Image (cartoon, rainbow, N blue to C red; front, side, top):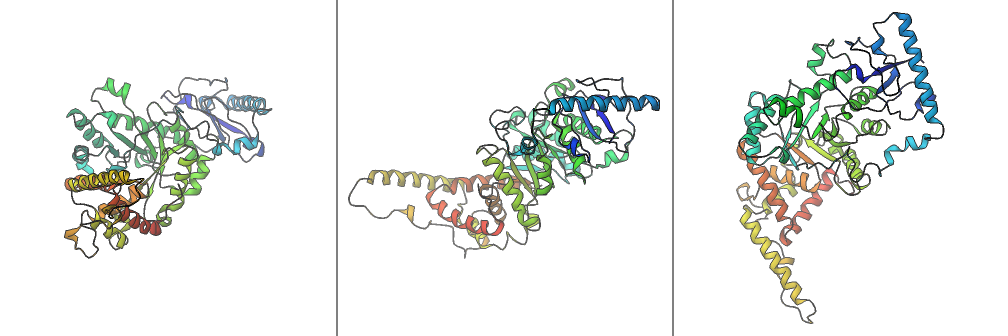
Length: 482
């Protein structure tokens, strides 16, 4: 089959070399190994012509196909023939004794190259609750600023003007940095490239390929989310902690093309990559391809019963990656949105949610008292070790005093039912939650309650109630083995 060769050198944005690939129906070409040059090799598609630049060649001196499109037909056929022949020679040369099919097929199972200090997979400090900016419109900048002021250190946005304002998100971030509330290094900022975005569909001549759309989207995001107002500073230091594909394309070949384009920015301008609104088969197809050199570290989906029973299989996949690929480190994180609105038929009616909400102390001072009591009891128990006669039972083994009675009214709850559901989801199920509240009080309460529950559940009194409530939560949503 005749192959068209498309070189990334046709685009004005400088990119580091990426690995070439083949996607044809030929059994021979499917076995071709990775080739370290700046080309994508695909069956001839019906794509619009590119705006051409001065002809360049890749590192293997194979002519770029698109750079020859304006030449006479005979020269085009000659260029195609020359390129295909050169490609075949290099592929044949590298196939001989270098890689076996089984090694290529098991690329996903290899962990040695991805664990440790791999520069393409740096450790990212991701908060357990991220502020979501969808549907905030002209209030986006003020709400982002307020969220940071109240304690949020993670911000989620997208280069999708229909539902997000990435530009106003950046404005709110820069205002918070300028006022000394936070530094850029203390923030985790993620945005999204959206396939089939209106901006690309409106001007197909400007964005004729998926790669050109990705490059334009990333350039726009870096500009919008730059943490300094100076253009020179934006050029040198702006970066994004995670760039998420808003969804896969309908066909996996297009998804892979977008992903390989995104890979070229890692780890300098983009620290990590993720993907959203994806199913487990789609994800497995993507990561099993040997052309994927940057592994997704964020899987962002709706966390609700209607989505494959709280997305159990994908959460299990993430847990498996952390235990095997990352050797126990939490590098692959599952992010859930619609955590409250998508589960209104569950969290308000569950007995274990109300029990937890009633048992948590109302103030941080009460939690400190329980922590001090637990520490004192531990010291007393240590002193009694070795004694033949024990003393009276202490409060460590008893039921917690104070709140915790299910018969209590809502006014007696230590935290809200919403906060209790958040705590079980985040602290128990290890889901990073996107919180899009527009209420300043809720911003403060959600973060405060999460911290309070986390401290309280480690006390002797709190652990007993937490374990009982979490068992109910696990029975409802499922809990992947760690």
